[in-house]
Length: 185
Length: 201
Image (cartoon, rainbow over all chains, first blue to last red; front, side, top):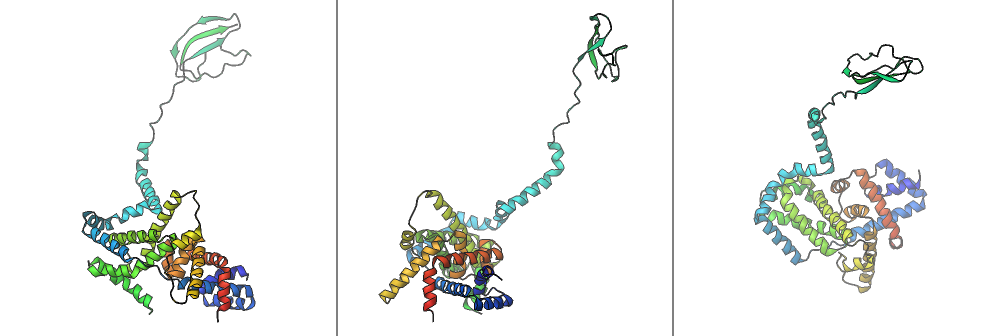
């Protein structure tokens, strides 16, 4: 195993968090690797220094200030209200947390899901095609012979004898309303 | 059972007494834990006055919200968690206010060192003071995430489980942050700890 592994393990060993097997491995490695042994010794000295540092103390005046603020809070109406409401506010604190708000979002979606139909837009009515001029081709002079307006429900309807300029059939007509017929030569 | 374990086992009883309205119980809770709260805040912020303000805020919060503590035997971790929330808020606000300013870390640490001076042999006191100054400066230079776990474990003596509870992370994160934080600290104090290792009997 590499020194990198023992570097991480060193901290666990220091706190007695390593398993007996890990301890055995670590001790074996330390006996072979002087660098890891030195590092572990330094960590021991360093944590010893940290543990020996004295705790800060609070000035007596400051302690008095804290206790008087606690006393004021104990007798004040707002303080009493806060203490009464604090246990009730736990669900709101949960909702204010990130996991709580995610949970609330999913619940809200679940509750609203059956009603999403009401939120959908109204179905759009079928749009009728705009009135179109129908042109009929004839072999003689280009002149208007008739102007007709009317409706037809027959999709395949076409004027009798109609043909395209190249002699083919006129395209299928899907027109419900037409105004005039032009005849071309 | 150690003294600390006994105190931990007693926390649930203490909380119950406070909630029953016993006048001395809160004072007992304060005297048992104000050093922890103050020490944690002072070491993370390097500002003793700010730490005292945070200590006041934390105990006011405890006074108001103790009834919401679901597991009274985890009082210590809960206190640390409240303190850390306040510390992080103060740190964020400090960074916002003084963005772009640069201050000497040595000056800050020496001016607001949370430790008391040592008495007795002046030369020894001088060496000890210098060692503390170096230690404080190295600790202050650690990124806050690592500093938090190092202070909680190596100075305040919390267990891994309590640290995980206090910082709201899993055990793996606690272990890795602790290993990394200690390694950074060891490197910055290399000469100091090496001389300590060599003079060790």
